[in-house]
Amino acid sequence: MRPSGVIYQKGKSYKWYGETVIYLDKKTRAIYGFFQGIGVGLIGLCLISFIILFFHLIKEEIRYRFSTKHVDANPNIQVKAAVDENNKEILVKSEADQLGISSDFSIYIPKIDARSNVIASVNPFSKKEYLEALARGVAHASTTYFPGQGKPVFLFSHSTDSPANFIRYNAVFYLLKKLDINDEIVIYFYGEKHVYLVERAFVVSSKDTSWLSGEGDEEKLILMTCDPPGTTLKRFIVIAKKAI
Image 1 (spheres, rainbow, N blue to C red):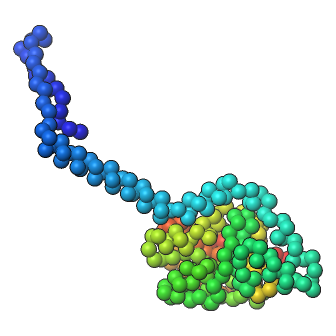
Image 2 (image 1 turned 60 degrees about the horizontal axis):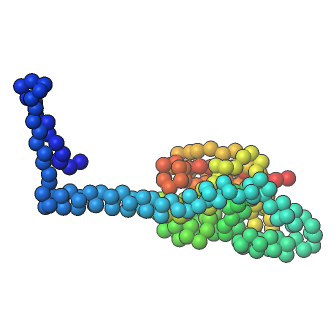
Image 3 (image 1 turned 90 degrees about the vertical axis):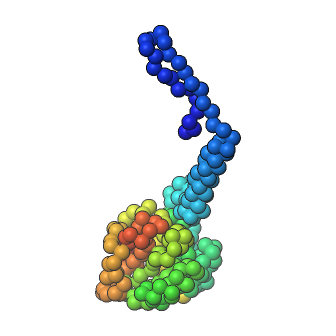
């Protein structure tokens, strides 16, 4: 990197050659050292920024890889609500409390241990409104229905704001791609427990808003997040049917 060392000069024959040794003066060495330090500092800053920015996603991936919950998805939680129909609301609330979420409106996905309160009736077309909602949990689109009404229910966790918010708001649904057909998704809604089974999952354009229409004669749970995580390039959709 520095102009230092030995310069070999050609002679008249292979027996004749010369050499010149050169060194940098202190001022030039200081300048090179200064710019080299800036380069190292910038690389370090970029690495630290990357870790901070993607901390939530890295944490979720590590948690999933070293967790056993996706193998045995809380069987005790799944069966308790059916024990006593008379105390069903109490049991449902107890379940939600154990998970650290509200029985009024929340989501729990056992396989990936994703859990969050759900903010009801959020306008998906109002950036200000849904960013405020996403800061508190997963958002429910006001253009769709509620669990138990026999119509589509649309929940989303994504942002079109700053890159830091892409990661922050996507963290709950970051592991959605780990779900397989028939994996359970649980929605708690005002004392009732609604169980849905994953039917299909796919990627759509970020401009595709057809899923927000609420149209359909069957109760489907639709989850949406950004794809790839941390971007606004596309949307990842999971559709689940109501369990019998």
